[in-house]
Image 1 (spheres, rainbow, N blue to C red):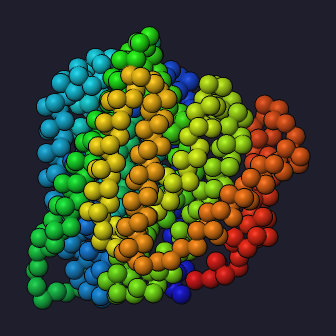
Image 2: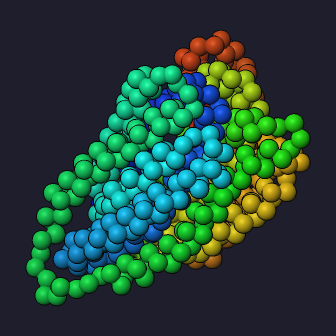
Image 3: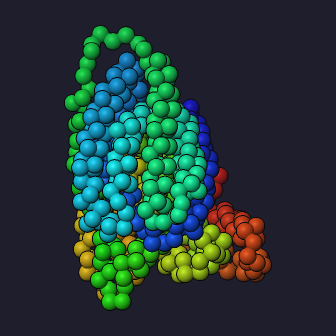
Length: 501
């Protein structure tokens, strides 16, 4: 019962903090898109895709290894090993972060010419490279805090990072004149760099204070480097491949879009920026609650797996799967029903509407896939997760290479559907095989879909038309949610027993 309450409390803390940060982040993304335009947004998204791969090189699965090992030691009562594992992992992270930094600096000019279409200088890549060592250490410490279930410290560090990133970036936007593509990207990169350093200093201070509770004497000065590498190395190799393919995938989109007759480099970057920087940002926004679950499930499942508590694993798996699907169906309904109003209220661009409606059904598989991945990682199946992701990326790249020059941006939408359906289906099959869990598909999927369809029909009779005011849109969405939840209880798709620990 105590573990369940802790889990719920951590979920609430992270959900609230994530909600605040994502609302602020979404507002900042809207500000950016209006300030720099879709072409610059497309270039910045390309910079982020390269940065993401560099982060993978710097972290190399160490965070998951720390979470996994520390969770196990705590479950087994070996408290004296906790601090040793984290300290040794920080040393490894520091070395990897420096290597990744030097590599990105060395390749910055080549990457700028070949992948950023020479739209900006190599300064942006050099600046983000400097942030890699502290980011690697921060990831390691976050793994520690996740394992010891003091997530409020991680949440506060993330909030500080997001806050300073926005403040610094907006300040730089206003002092660097004139605003052009180069300066826009530099402002965003500098904001990320400085906020990363501030967050790192804060997080490290929290760790120094927190680790004192594990000062118990140990008879052995044991090295855990082998244990850390045993978990992180397979993750690292598959992560390198996965992240490398993901980067290639993102970089390939504007390149192959250009091959379609009548599309210039600027148009290709603009379309890429609109889909990745606007539509997908909006689609992923509600997933912040799912990401909280996914992150907390890793230490929880690691603990239960170490104790070989198969019954509890099955119970939690069923309830989390059900809760995630009920939530996903609701979000799909909101996006599909209010696509027009959301496009105008958030981006003031009607052209975003059609892509929201087209991509909205993907929510049903995207969100559950995130949770399932967290479960599998906690059950020490992270390598299987990575293999699935690699297969997905290889197929996506092949399809993009073929379809984008023919169908343009709609070819990318087709690839998104194939990718998410493939990845999600394989992950769910792996989870069922691992846990032997039995899922009630009718109650989990079909009942909620029926409730959403009825809510969609009812909203036109209950609420008034959207009048251009955000308050009106929020009012309509709240009515929609109320109808959906009421129908869930009426159809017994959700009941009081689902709240029981």
